[in-house]
Image (tube, rainbow, N blue to C red):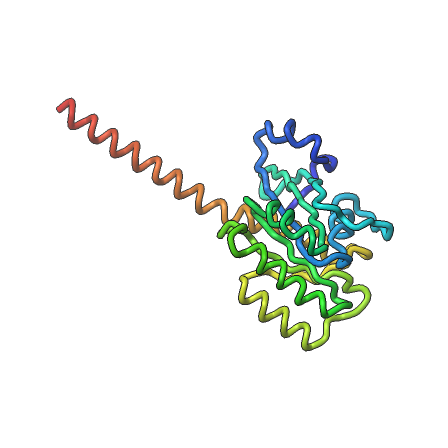
Length: 217
C-alpha cells in the first residue's frame, strides 16, 4: 500500500528535502511531444486534469513524498521535453534514474515508434542497468489500442522487460496504480541488495573476530 504523506514539492525545495533520511527515487518520463507526459504528472500530483499544458522546454522537475511498505520515499519526477531538439537534455536527465516511464498515445499508433526511439537513444550509454522500465499508453479514454498496436507493445515490453499500463490523464484511470507499482518494485529490488550488504558485513565482522581471537590464544 502506498500513502501520500504530504504535499508535492518543486526543484527549489530539493536541497532541504534531500537532507532528510527518506529514500530518494529518481523517475524520468520520456515520449514524443503531445502524448500527455505533463498531464500524467499533473494528474498524479494534484488529482486534477488540465487541458492547458504548454510543451515542456528542456525538463520540468516535481515530486511527491509517499509511504510504501512502511518506508518513506521521495519520488523525484523529471518530465522531459518530447521534441527532437531536446533529446540531448533528456538523455542527461536519465542518468541515475531508478525508473523510466515511456509514454505513447493510445489514439495515435505512430507514437509507439517515437517511444521506441526514445528508449534507444537513452539506453545505449545513459540508463543504469538496474533502472525499472514502464510503458504508459495514455489517452485510453479516447480509444483502445488496435490488435496490431497491442502486439507491438507486448513484443516491445517483453524485449526491454518493461511493465505496461494503460492510463488516462483525463479520467485518472491507471495513474495512481502506475506510480504505486513503481514504488513497490523499487523497494523489491532494493531489499535483496541491502540484505546482501548486511550479510557481507556480518561475515566480515565474524572473520575479524575469529582472527582477533586466534591472535590472543
